[in-house]
Amino acid sequence: MLLLLVACFEGDPADSAASNPVVLPTSASAAELYGLQVGAKWTFLRTNDALRWKEITGCEDVMVIDPETGEHSLVRAYVRENRGEFGTTSVHYLIEDDEGVKRIRRDDVDEGELTMFATYSPPGPRLYNGPYPDGMQWEFSVVTGEFYPWSNESRGFAETSAVDTLLGVESLDVMAGSFLTVAVDRQWDANNPHNVESHYAPGAGEVRERTEWPGSPPRVEIEELVAYMRMSTRDPVETPDTRQSAA
Image (cartoon, rainbow, N blue to C red):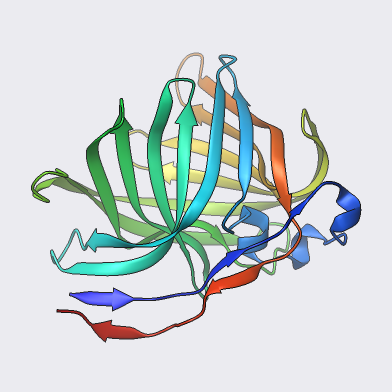
């Protein structure tokens, strides 16, 4: 088994924009745009008037199974919990590398019980690092494997691909305030092709997400930021960056 340790960061909550210097979205890193640090919290409102909460609760070692080789690894990752009105719905394990922010595992939760976990080969990109010139594109493919949590046995796997297109810098007004954002359009080519347009702002994270599925008429779901805990710094919590064998 392999053990991969990477840096995790946390910041001090800031009560106002005055605590954060203005950072142009195009000069921010993917981690800054994504809000990747321990203690970050967000409240969102979806199209159906349902509230959702997201929080990076910590940084921990998580077991990851390569869906192609079956190899087991322990990876240090940020833990982001997604909650609905009836409790936790999923847990996402995120890392930062030279390319940007990526997801290495997703846990599906129902009434407090882990029902399934998914892993990715290679880790699934959430947001690439800049620079962010208008029209810039990134393409990627990923194999997603699903596993039974009580046995770690495979439920199957699928290969998908997507193209990210940078739409540019946009000023956006949502319930949480006014933001200067980087807008990224992601077109998924999968069993259920769909389009996701996301807006990210330094110090805030994702501000708005619009997902559209094809159809007549197309189905559209929008999620907008209502409130968030702004982070003023990204101070390291864990600093080792080594790979070693584990018993």
